[in-house]
Amino acid sequence: MKKILALVLAFCMMAALGSSAFAEAEKPVELIVFAAASMTETLTQIADLYKEIAPNVTLVCNFDSSGTLKTQIQEGADCDVFISAAPKQMNQLDISKDETANPDRLDFVLEGTRVNLLENKVALAVPEGNPKNINSYDELVGGLKDGSVMLAMGNSDVPVGQYTQKILAFYDLNEEDLAKTGVITYGSNVKEVTTQVSEATVDCGIIYGTDAFSAGLTVVDTATAEMCGQVIYPAAVLNISKNPDVAKAFLAYLQGEEASAVFESVGFSPLA
Image (tube, rainbow, N blue to C red; front, side, top):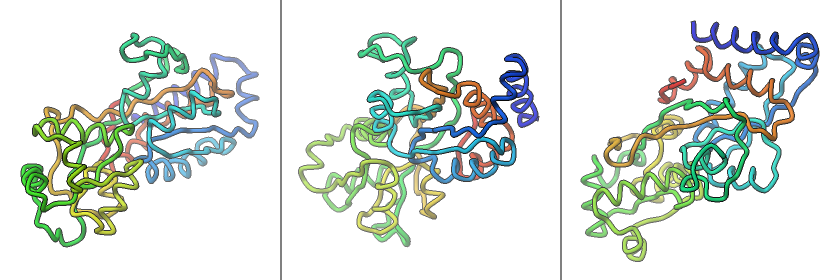
């Protein structure tokens, strides 16, 4: 039913624009999607599925940390749809947000298109065999304090790193002091952190549950909302889009049954 509603929404939107919009939609269109690195597997699969729905639309996906993507957009990169792994980076591009959330008064979000698309979980993942026998965040904290555990986490400018910082603060741990003792390594996005865990160059890593699933890693604990807040992925069409109506139709598809099934298969919880 969600798929049908999404498709009806997309077609109704095109119909409201008149026959010229239909003619334009039939032309080959390249739609540029900037998405958080944690969506690499799901959006790649969705791109193939969407080709059957809209054969004229070619999705070009740019995956990286949400902070890097936000900077690229701000610096003039072409982008039609932006999906962030946290509200912070979307807020920084959304003129409807106050100066606390958007201090530079950037205006890139097309009014009326922003939705909370997905929810993820912040997971404590371990390498194959769990060599250090880490089974919870509480045990991680003990290992960090006595120097017996090496943790991989995201940099402070990427959402997964920011969620990890909240978890450390929840346990009254000083990240800077821990880093100086050599028990923390960093990654510039969640995929780099995931790779460190997969290759067992660290004893554990804090990543998203979906990345752990895609990489075949064992999750030993999941952070609560009290520890780091909800992990919400907002999505929006940008007002710099060269194909805003096509972009709106794709965003509607992402909220439908078919795309939701792909997201759910790796552990995302669809919200829209």
